[in-house]
Amino acid sequence: MHLDLTDLRLFRHVAEAGSITAGGARAGLALASASARLRAMEAQAGVALLLRGRRGVSLTPAGEALLHHARLVGQQVERMRGELGEYARGLQGHVRLLANTAATVEFLPEPLARFLAAHPQVEIALEERTSTAIAAAVAEGRAELGIAADHADLAGLEALPFRTDRLVLVAAPDHPLAGRGGVRLEEALGWPFIGLGAGSALQRHLAGHAARASGRLRLRLQAPGPEAACRMAALGAGLALVPEAAARRAGAAAPLALIPLAEAWAERRLLLLHRRGAALPAHAARLLVHLAG
Image (cartoon, rainbow, N blue to C red; front, top):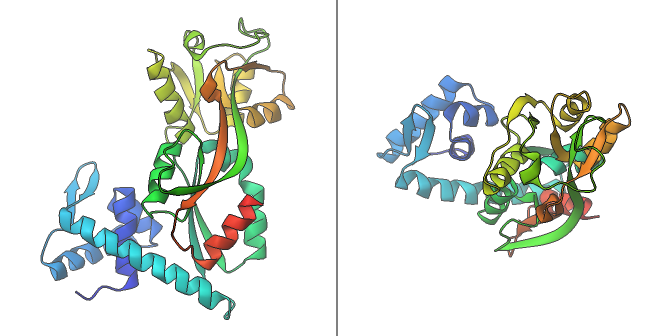
């Protein structure tokens, strides 16, 4: 087979996204170009690499084997870039960083901005995921770094302290729950909610806890972010369940009630993760030190 780095990078992105359209976009290729490259790869291999369906694509056993090698090649290329970058300025380095909603929205913007300003040759692919998915992806080598809550499975990972995150309920000042010293999620489920977008990792996380409490979050609307949800909750549209930092920031602009969530899982230690025993590319290692500091 004669595959170039673009082919392998495209295949890796398509496999991780479960979609030719999304994977092609991540690789910087139009759908027609991405599809043509994938068909050419299958023709060279003499075997199907992808199972195509109406809801996306999945890997055949041959595709799984190719994905393994594509990841290894990608990691070697990033190590080469990092080492050569010590000698040749301007060589691009790429780091894939996965983070949960709280880290993405509340804690990462300023540290990442400072790192990018100091390292103009590095690009960071920041993607929001649930903590469980983040830990699995980093352990499997699908991302160099991750930031996840401490409830995730940390097998095969090194974990460094990053931040502490607390989830709280937000309501209008005259809401019946306002002023309570703590409210269980099961009790709050009796009220309508303003949720976060369908792609929000935090929203999926909360839906899981609601299901374990034998209920569901009755969403009146899904807001584009935690602060927007807080502003709507403050005006009586429903309850919001968001990181405390976002709630306090929204509370500085409008009156609202901040209600502690009386659940052990509401307070989460966020951890900075990388794969145990794996040598990070130089630029990923520098980002790790920067975030840990």
